[in-house]
Amino acid sequence: MSLAKLETSLGYRFERPELLERAVTHRSWAHERLKGRPEAEIREAENESFEFIGDSVLGLAIAEALFAKNPDLAEGELTLMKHRLVSTATLSQIAVGLALGRHMRLGRGEEQSGGRTKPQLLANVLEALIGAIFLDSGYVAARVFVTRVFTDELKNVTPKTSVDYKTMLQEVLQAKKLPAPAYSLIRTEGQPHDRTFFVEATWPSGRATGSGRSIKAAEMMAASEALKMIDDAKAETK
Image 1 (cartoon, rainbow, N blue to C red):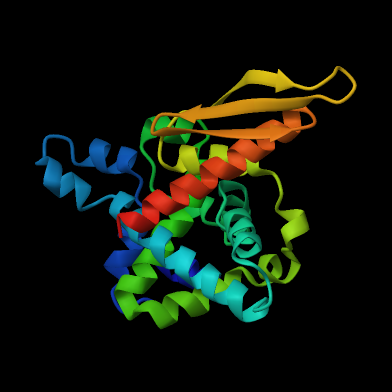
Image 2: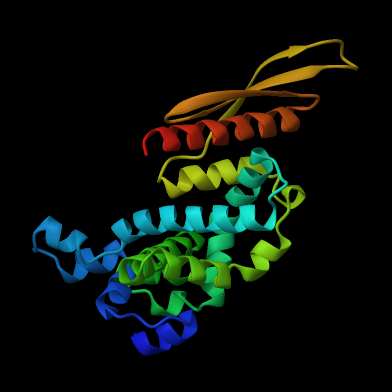
């Protein structure tokens, strides 16, 4: 791995290159190379805690950029666009554009299973890099990096292009290493030609309901409510 080439790809030069090295180190590599070492030492070599920091920094930078661009939009619309921009799908696409896959340090198992092209791993390493830049130079430098690499996405995102709540909920849960939500029809109301469907979405830490003129619409509403509940719970813990 050439750190210099990666820094060129990122458009950012680290004052502390060891932060960059850790940001691209997957836990599989650390456990494999440091086998037998204390668990704390292994954790200090891999990038999961950097992902945690990068996730928060990314969320703030994207929220700030969206508000600056769309000061007249409602909170719900801004939240919807934010979910789309910080989704696994968007992050992995940006990571591919930065050629992060070729620079990741992976264990043999992840390497053999195609880890360099897995969307979740690519999204995770991008978040870890954002966290590393924050630790290296602070929030302003991290925000500059985020707004630069998200330029096209920030330009093109609108509330109308960000309406797939079910996909967003699945990606939010996946990022937390939780299983996908389950949807169940709990009841219907009205005549056959004018029915309203009520659906419940459940996930390990909660449940939410939605209604609509079709089961799909009800599922979308339930997923939207679930995302709001998860955001509210996250805000309460800060």
